[in-house]
Image (cartoon, rainbow, N blue to C red; front, side, top):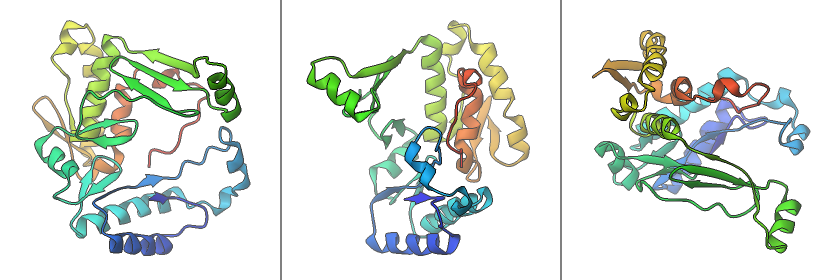
Length: 245
């Protein structure tokens, strides 16, 4: 499901939710539309005045969360819902849910190979992305060349931060791993953890065992809670991102 689409309203969104419920899916994803015309050229055909306001977008997300949980679904992470008997719901009850580029999963440590233009491959200590333009990707494949355009090798600090963010987005806990001390990044991560104190006053997190547990309300803002642990976010000057909600 996608909310925040052009000409979409909370009334039309509610009718969509009703139709989807009638299909009785085992699980579903609910994403916010990302309007990035500077990067996705054909989106320039969409008039920005036709897009729902940020307040309406948040209302649609709240509507989906209330609707599906009221009808027996478990809220999984930041954008998925699943029936109680689904393995994703079981994983979140056991605290071993995981997330990769394809979404939430019960399988940890799986390496993903991206096929097709712009797709991303994920390995234990490496991310790589294929060429984006279809014609360029096709030409590279046809000539027997690598279709990879960029990548990032994760260092030990990256791996620790990845673990923190993944655990937050999957199991709704924010904890600094013991390995952070031996890798010399404990103080930086402690500062990031301390920066979340204002969110506690807003009811998004609850202090627990030297870290935080995310509240049901805070679950709607997992991306915001993860931002202090992203060491590269401050370097993204001039970059354009989709909305966090």
